Length: 551
Image (cartoon, rainbow, N blue to C red):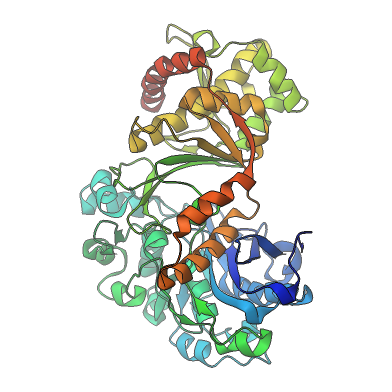
């Protein structure tokens, strides 16, 4: 729990906006004041604070590839989170709107009793006790699940191929996407499916808890299901039929705008925590989309999130052309915008692993290694996968090519990498990861957006050498932007935006733009010579990446 030192005293708080993020390992809550400054934060760590659910890092793993989380864990976490905020003397009565986010793609299966239970919650009893029978299936599939490969391939085949599916729904079929998790239950657990009255995403499930009734799925997070036609913003009837038969559309309900005001907060929260009865609930969305809001990503701007896995996303008013690699989502902030997103499984964990194996020490050693090699690595290009990659799909291993495109090192086991070319490998790893991001997002963003800075967040944004390579590869200023709890912050921003939009007040995006000055910590300008080197290099990189995929 934390309370920033510049917090305004409670009696001076005119309005508060609550943002909640339901992540894989924890649930976070933030409260923003009228200036959109974070004035309260709290979080609940599932494994340590809710140990009776017996999760590891927030999930249950059934080998080989099934990953779930108990739906009741998230229910209980809501009570725990609000109790923590109560101990901070949060003036709940001043919260005027609530929104938030959740890990994408996961699904919750409600029973026929759910509606009645949600509408008749007793403030004298805990949520988890009252909602014990609200679920037809207690285990919710989450984004880590990859048990539906066969279902995905059949789904694509029946709908006309991966490109056709991407054209309609924004993405080719991916194991974690909701359509295929539903299809698995529809086929393997028909009785459970029959008893399911409603299917929610984790985001709309959380909205339902705060609303006190079953809430609709919003367009942004709905774009990550392989079920929503992202152009018409309606369910794709053929995809719906393939995933769950004729009853699925009724089980999903109608998708709604990300900016809808769905109603007043449940009486449970009014009576138990003293929320205002006038507080409204705005649809929750997916965590990546909410992070884009929290980072104040502008139109035609690219952001890189460098973490355990790396993510690159881009906001545009022009609908990108979907493909079988990457994703296109309806934007959860701007009604006429789109978010293109690519996720890379090999992020900081792979960087840290190779750093330790090849040169040891900390990132100071990496700095010295990079200083011993020039931009462009004397023509060497490498591909390094400690984990099977998803963008594009490639198995574990590593491959190093020289300036003549000759394969000079390759092995299915990255552990076998040699220290003989350690400096070459270090630069090839980092350049290769950034070139891949620039290559794939460039196909969505085009090449005419060079005036906007590239935002960089996550641990890697603190490393000037890594930031310099990003600036050089993208040919734009790389700007570090650290926003702790960016998904929850994005939820708070969206909660505020719904009120601003309804009242037709000052342009909200302009207000957020003014906030960005407080979030900048490091800016790095591109080097012209290095930029030209990488501009030429990216064509070779694409050719060699396709070659690795074929081999």
